[in-house]
Image 1 (tube, one colour):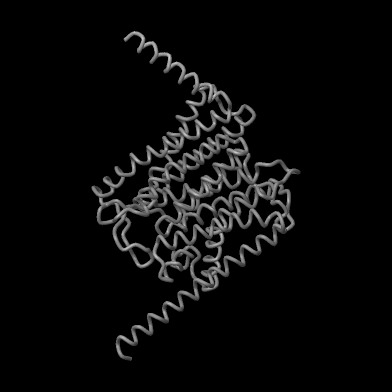
Image 2 (cartoon, one colour; image 1 turned 60 degrees about the horizontal axis):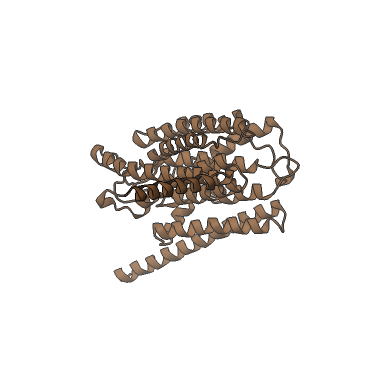
Length: 404
């Protein structure tokens, strides 16, 4: 018996020694911290989301259907309430564990990284509460814009702003007087563009998840592990939400939307990752991929928001009046289901990313942007033709049925 206890103790000691030896190298510790943060965020989201559904049912907190919306049943839109708490809890715990295993933040980056993260979390939390209020009782769009400009200004306060355009339209370095307001306006625009994509099941959530997953891998490759950890924390909290958002059944009270508390914060965080990645390389050693990847990931929502606003302006409609002219509405109008529309648009997003990453080695950045715009116009035109065709078929069917 004593021999068995001794063998067990030796085995345990040997196993712990092996684990500690495995995590001696920094990149192994980084892998561990990223995995830990991802799992914690995933578990927190899995635990809280069902409770949110119960609260929504008890208090009658539903998003009622109307002529503009794509759903026909009462569905809670409070799924986004889990995102920021999941990220804050998992990231804070993971950073603490990193210090426990003698793997603190990179001293070369701790000043700027810590400042950026603190401002980012402050801005995200503020926008989270604005979105939560809008989901519960509504907030006028003017107040939401004021809040968005306020949190967008936190990026330049941390020293993060777009100071180089990589030769787009012949522009390279930007002076701070132009770069700072341009960055603030761009953050607000991206935040709202992502928010506007939250119109059908899975589109905003899965689109954001793809972006965060790609950024997580790219930041890990660059050795910016704290940003990679944050990216995977967001992936972790989005995965359970997508299950309820895509596969949930309204009649069983298992379906939910993310609401503005989720879509606004996702857009805000995506704008941070995009700007940060664009500014990863030093001026003078610019890598066009650092511009192309963020541009490609955000092109679909950004272009669609611009197209819709141009159409509204051309038709003398209010720019901020909601309608059913977005690309996901067009997909539904062709007869596609929510899941098919989401699959089509996410496939389009991935094609853009791979196509642009390959083409940027062979053509000018300005030409690449023009090609992307032309392809987007072509896709919208094809969808419009399918909509007309479907309407004509329905019209003929009605005439045949009525004998006219």
